[in-house]
Image (cartoon, rainbow, N blue to C red; front, side, top):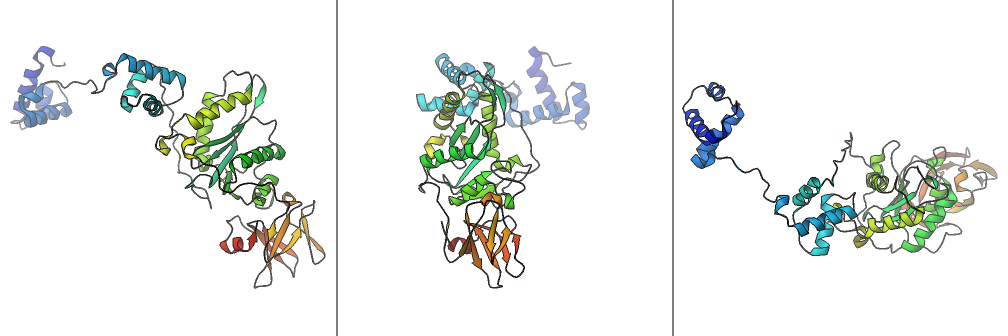
Length: 392
């Protein structure tokens, strides 16, 4: 039975004094009807603190919700009501920006929990952290943009599958667009607007789905990704079946699903624009030192002047790809890829007599003049030597 409350301190003291002399500690614990763990705790506390250590310590948190003033609690709750899907850290950061100082993160957490304004997140554990093969981790804005379709849902206007484009380094959401379809023309028009407004990124990372890539084409090139290359943008792709390779983008999609999917709005795009503005200008990110994406992002120094009519190759001969995806060499037609129709390819002479075939900065493969065979390259990044030989 538990020790009586009125005799609690005396019983603990009596036990602790006997515990210092007994040869059978567990038997003593059974006599006092406590577990060995509790017995060791009171014995050690008696040794370290004497009689003062035998009293019950308060379990009340040092910064309990009750110690937070009513006005402060009202402010905290009002902010949470305004940003229902934000956690305590983000709510506290917005609070500090408005009022200069405030309670600790733990106090925010306790107040919001007791007000029933928090919910436990499900933690998804992965077998591996995920890594982009031949990719890069952005160290500055516009080094890498990431792109994907959110995944469809139905609203009052029918099926909705918005396109999302994000700057990896700053988390800045460049676009959240309800397109009429997922065709190359629609997505390219969207990127033309982004390039005009923000300039060009160093690379674009996507998954292997259409229209970003084509599983049946040379090096997975689609007409859209070929257009990116023609504008001097490198390509990065996540591994098939590995969404963690684009983890930050997927995390943002979960926010969109939780805050936009299933809500009622008169028109999609105005609702999307409002959400994007809040995400960029109001929502702090722990990975940015609690800054907002808009406080970190800056436009690219590489401005866009429109799609080039053709790609210029220095110290290379060129061949135009026909509508059937072929080039002519020594009077013979050699198939390369229909995704490159209308574009010039660069042929670079090699020491072994063969020719490297380039599209923009990407090595497509090797042409053997003797057999007139085109041997596709394995997916890899362009080499510095190739980049030096290109003028785009």
